[in-house]
Every structure is written in C-alpha cells, then in structure tokens.
Image (cartoon, rainbow, N blue to C red; front, side):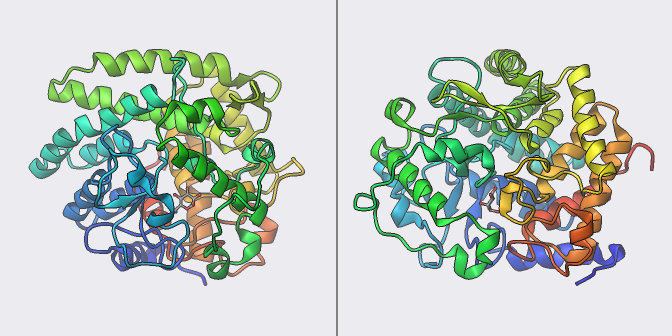
Length: 443
Ligand code: GLC
C-alpha cells in the first residue's frame, strides 16, 4: 500500500475514529483491544486536531484506571466481555491490591509516564481553551500522584532512578536489553499457570516475542501478583529489576512539564523540583557509558550496566538530560545510521548480532520514538537531524501504511508493501499527523 503524503491527514482521522471506542481509543483492532497507557497520551494529541473533547476524554478515561497508591496501569480493560486478549483482566487479578479500582479493571504494572508532557503539549496547542485549562488543572494532582508512586515504590533506596520489574513496563517489550535478566528466571512449567497466547494468531510469529520470552513475562506477572503489585518483596525478589533509560527519561520530561504547569497555575511544585534535581543528576552520573558514547540501562539485580546501544539512550534528548558533549555523540550516532542507509531511528544497535530488523523492539523503527527524538533534537538545535527523523517516519508510513513498527534497512524496506505488527495503528496515525503539523526550524 502506498499513501500520498497529502492524503495522510484524512487517513489519520479515519483511523482515530475507527479505533475510538466511545471514551477511549484502542491501539489497533484485534491485537490490542483495550486502552494502553502511553499509547493514549500520543493518541490524545492526534484527536486534538479533530475534536478536543475526544482528546480530553481519552486522558480522562486513562486516569479512571489510576490506583489509590498513584500508579497508572499499563492497560485499562474497559470491556470485560472482550476475551480475545492475553493476559486479560482476570489473569492479572489486579484487585489483589485493595487500591486497584473495581471498575475499570486494569493490569498490575505501569508504562512510561508520558502524561505530564502530553497535558503540557495539549495546553500549548490550545492555550485559551477553558475546558482544556480546567481539565489540565484538575488532572495535575493525579499526574503528580503517579510520579510520587514511582519515586516511592520504584525507588526504595531513594537514588532518583526508578526501577521496572517487567519488560512490558518499559514500553520496549522484547528488546535484547532484557534477555540476560530473563535468562535468570528458571521457569518451572508445573508452577506456571496454564495460558494461551493470542498475539501469534493475530500477527506473524516472527514479528512477535518467542514463547521462551512469554513464559518469563508470565513468571514476572505472577511475581507481581504475589506481592499485590506494589509490595517491597518485588524489589527484594524479582530476578528482573532494571533502571531503564526510557522510563526515567520520560518521567524526567514529565516532571519538567509538571513544574511549568504548576507554576502557571500557582500550585506548589517544591516536591517535583526535588525529584527532578535528584533524578537528572543520578541519570547522568549513573547511566552514561563513556566507551559506548551512549546512556545504558542498569541491571539493579546484577549490579551492573547493560552495555547495549539502543533507542532509550537517544530518547534522553527529549528530556534534555545529555550535556552538550553527550548530545553531540547521540546526534552523531543518528547521522551515522542515516548515512549508512537506515531509516532512523532503529530500536536496537544495527551492528550487534542481536539486532533483528523484523522483530518488534529488536530493531524496527517506532513512530512514537521518532516523535520524541524529533523534539529532543530540535531542543538541542540539531534541526537538520530532526528533519531526517521526521521525514523518515513520514516516508515509511506513506510507503508502507500506518503500521505499528517498520523495517529499518532502506534496501529491505524498498522491497516491502507493508510495515510490521498491527495495521491502522492509532499512535502511528497521531504521531505522524502531529509531526506533519510541526514546522521544522529550517523548513
Ligand atoms: C506493545 C508495545 C507497547 C505498546 C503496546 C500497545 O506492547 O511494546 O509499547 O504500548 O504494544 O501499542
């Protein structure tokens, strides 16, 4: 399928309306039939161009799943009759935690905390809209509460860096980053509850995680359940315990947005400023790797960095974490990939044997990542690279359709008629539209 750029705009509206389920938007039909946390943030930006009420409702529906402890879950199961997804709400059994809402049902883990910067972005788009102003004001404390949850439950040693205990929290579900930690898990098939995957009957198996990985995802889910999803036992026992670059960078970006929003509304932002100061310092000090010229994730259980170059490092530009030297290194990394015939930005190091250009987070290009990286590059004045990041994703979508993720090698992509994973994908539509609307500095 090839869509001329001029018609992208109309296609976006069609996709967002098709995936709108009267109150929230599914990422794509079949594969992901519920509301996903960070997807919703980007999707809300897309809706705002056509119908601001829908954009507001999208975020509001997400917040309706927030737990009493502050966590915003990674999936909100608005429909309990939809049985085509695994793990469904009954498998998660989130109500094992007394602070999880009875309705809507939710999962028991979280995802990157995009909400702060999404609310700020919406407000910058519509600064005088009374309804939006009221919504952002009333959502402010919910988002702060979710950040407080991160720093309280996911940073027990008060380092300023939060941990994840499940790959699905990272947003980059099957990145090679997690392989060694998953290998640590010894699965006893007799103890693991029986389950049936749904994803591999809906998308080609070679584009999805393996069953070896899936068993371990279920193992970690069960571990979360054992500790009501917020107990300290998770920190003490989980074989998978990681301080992730993307999770922490997104949190830092949203902290900054909350500080600006709070100042604008006259709210106290002292607590957020403290988190922010500590988080930024710890990030630069602990996660920068001189040999790789990249930020790396830290394996808290193993007590060492995980030395891979991948997209979480580049996304730090969006949170304005790198100093000038580091930012230049990250910009060079992207330019080098561009010159070598890749669409930027591949999700994993193309020179590493674990790079897999087809499989999910092990290589392909992801639209929402390009969206963040584009803004990050512009913030540092790398507007020419920003333009490449923007035009690459637009070109991929125009050539191959609104897929979930895309082939990174240009020579291979030229032989394809489609992207990878789900089609008519909501955040792909939303991010491409938002990028099309952005005037680049040198356009
Ligand atoms: C996959 C992605 C995750 C996303 C979800 C819904 O699980 O890895 O980041 O939120 O799909 O699109």
